[in-house]
Length: 173
Image (cartoon, rainbow, N blue to C red; front, side, top):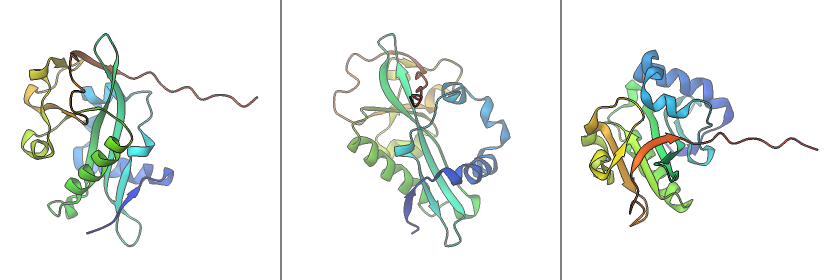
């Protein structure tokens, strides 16, 4: 198995090409991308798998989101992508396990995603709509999933998932 490493700033172009190869260039028209616009992904939850030459074979990222009128903070998993030549070897599952462990250690409490139920259910994800959550645009109900990273984190949490406020950088004085 390839080691899981933190994403580096120089990986961005390779990751974009991998995402286009895996999901197509139309991917950016989906609802989850509206939640990502203008918001940086969480650098501490961005991981890659590279081959010996440095080529990115797999990638996972998370984005900050908020839930409901109370703006409960959560993270949104995705995208996770593996180069087609390396799919089926456990790279995606390893990236998910590794990153969810890191998210828990960092104190994140709720994780949502839009993805295939049979793939994500073994990690502990369940239907988000059944728990009173909604996306701000169309997604297939059975693909909208969530997971408590800490027991009780979802108690009383309902509503529409919203975009996190962009982090503003301080200017040097």
